Length: 69
Image 1 (spheres, helix red, strand yellow):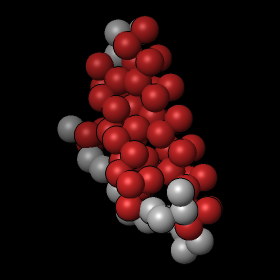
Image 2: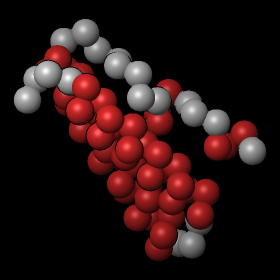
Image 3: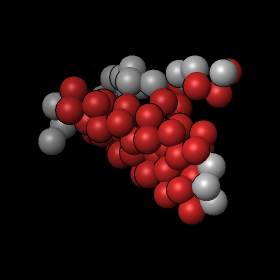
């Protein structure tokens, strides 16, 4: 399915050269993913829930790779 393909919003790739900007961006990605996951669960939309879970996981992975904190 096309909606299951990694897109920039669920990519694990670093998006900023500055570690503070990268940390902030990765946190935003996690928050956005967590919201999508919760909304998908609430409205019983498995696709949205899965997409949110992937975004959240990608943000966590980016934070692990970052050296700002």
